Image (cartoon, rainbow, N blue to C red; front, side, top):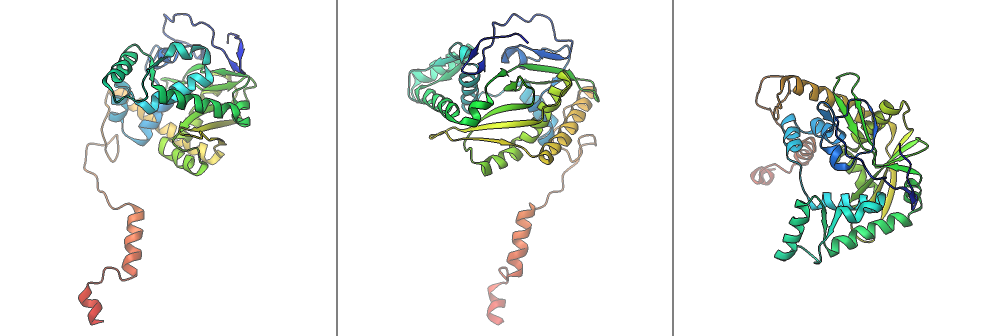
Amino acid sequence: MPDGATVAGVMERPAESTVVAKITEPGVYDLSAEAYHRDPCDGPSLGSTGARILASDCPAAFRYKADNPEVKEEFEIGSATHLLVLEPDIFESRIGRVPFETYQKKDAQAARDEFRAAGRIPLNLRQMEQVEGMRASLAADPIARFAFQEVDIERSMFWRDPEFGFWCKTRPDAFPRNRRYLVDLKTSASSDPEDFRKSVANFGYHQQSHWYLDGVEQVTGDRPDRFAFVVVGKSAPYLVMTCYLDPDTIAWGGVLNRYARGLFRWCLDRNEWPSYKPDPVAPATAFTIGLPEWARRDLERRHQEGAFIPPQERIAA
């Protein structure tokens, strides 16, 4: 990996050369985020986000989202925060400052859309204050500050899946040079540990952890000991929390990732991306659906308490 100057303990990205040829060899590459997401391999590849969609949704949803990437303000705030914290040297060149408090006025909306069309992240005055507030909280937190020191930032890693043969990819936020752990920066509505526990299940962060650890092992030969999430709240006072996932949780992520990789291979081989089915490899059939378990338990409890006895029977009793 190329060396660079250190800015506030963060590896400054050197000037990137134009990537012409397709990636044909596993390894660690210095690519821009745009080049990474353009799928630069000499064949189809699967990343952590795609694996999470395949495991939790259906192939048709995966295919549509891959072909139609979403633009959401919440994604843009997260990306802008990553840039300001992890790659401050390129922050100004990647964002567009919109000189309005909100996007209620047409001029503000036009400026926002113009920046997006140019491939830049629009930030109005309130959003800029929000991003700077998160950066300040992260810099003031002793664990977060340590986590982003002496690290390589946003290095793109590619390898062929040893079981299913297609390309896999990952792009860790921060890869410490001692190679002992990985760090992922999350902006979240809440950094409360109990809230983040739910986010792990809802957004597949256990899959992400296992995917990233696998990727580093595939391209370097060494598996980091841990995967850390540094979580910062998106509203004042921008509270910060750092956590590790326990080994059992990460192991479940591995189970889901293997299922996703197998399903991806199956879809590639047939060029079929089915919608919701009880079994993705079986003929289309209708689902049989019942109440969620929590609703069933609630009904049973209320029934035992006599809540559903008609009034006439209560009076007669």
